[in-house]
Length: 566
Ligand code: ATP
Ligand code: MG
Image (cartoon, rainbow, N blue to C red; front, side, top):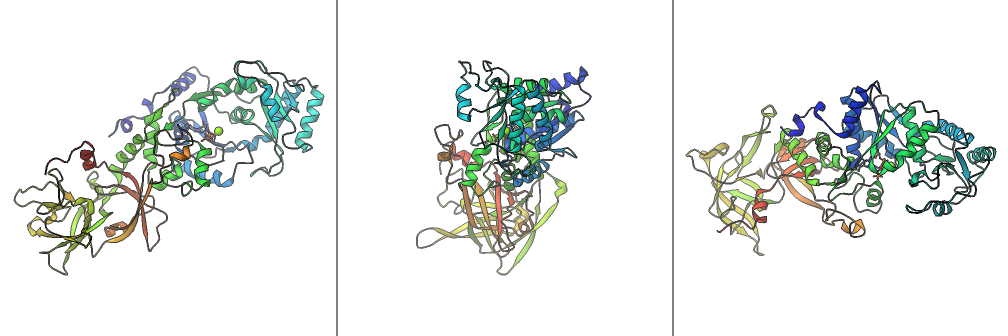
């Protein structure tokens, strides 16, 4: 068992859980309420998975609840497709929001009322400056901003204009509502932030009821307050927004007083975690869709066969901190292997078949041999595999001119066929181009089941399939979508897309049991890796995805400059 698996929830310690424990001990709250607040403008990615795991696990551990709230304040970019996919992904990850499904758009009336409250208190004003002018007036980190000439409008005029903004009298961008805070503040977010924009756009949920929409900052904290969120956990880029989060809540009659806490975003090597860039990959056709198995989206990882439990384990292991760092994508693969090793049924599949004829095996004969389903799990039982005179082995398991440490098949060498027999290569048949097209072998009938009768040892054990029984399949192998660990670091991230990150293998041959494999259920192809059925499969054609490779010992030896003398 891994360290992560043996940890139970009480052992999970990080600064956010410490804060929550302290708050509960001090009697600040009766219970814990968190939320996961996606904007429905794309599919969820691995970074969101971390946030989901954090928010929902905290709620579970402290006996509280976690809300799923769509932050749907930007009708131009948001779609129902994303709302649906997000719900599916959160459920698949293993979390349940129960009745607590909310939409920020449900609060539009209340938010508007609070905006009016701020206008009436002289704390918000309608500004006629254009977006560019507002930007120019904002100042810089070293220089204070300038007040807008419209900043000192009377409350009556502001109320009148804000109502007319809402009534649809003005064009997009003609006016905004701004909070009146401090144009000289050292925190740029407090330099009279925009609260409402005019956007004549139908909203997926509120239709044409509104033509003004609140900004993220004017929505988020208030939504938290309405839902009685106790701990509003977000990523570090919102740290500088916290004073504004607090300012709004302090200046309206908020129904509760949530607090915001920030942790560092998850960054993963060879990966991009930004919905904007992921959308670009999809829309420009660099990948086959949001759920392309190379995508770091939850739907892509699911399609690739990554188990939800492995993703949860990954999220737990990367932990929660305030320092920005990059997690090696290899850790995710490691979590997947560790989980799948325990759960996945073993099967034999030959991806690059080389025909082998066993000359002393009677023609027309076949037999069924016992094969173990999962050596890590006795309860998984056994299955039968058919054996016959003609089989296929992996082309890479044969070498004509083999070095000493190549423990596989070579002329004159003996190997074990897994669960079957010892075979010795007696002849190599080539085509006119000099390529090996077939091997001739003899088998030792005394070694049935792959057991040695006389203590004779063979170093190699190969997987194989029976030519008469095998089923064909397409197998898709995936590499990192990006060739460099830090895509985009030297320019456009699209230039770092690895055109060879997908290899499609046709003509692979599988043991027949694999024809019954279920979509989304992982299997181990012995000696190769973990695979799962892709939804592109049809009754005529099976398609498998490689979730993650097993570590290849031979590749390691070669990488070390090895192989040894012949
Ligand atoms: P993106 O930059 O990919 O568009 P976002 O933050 O704009 O992400 P939201 O839908 O607003 O996307 O995010 C929902 C929640 O997920 C937020 O609380 C956000 O902080 C969190 N989140 C987003 N990306 C990450 C990440 N890389 N690591 C951890 N949490 C993240
Ligand atoms: Mg966001």
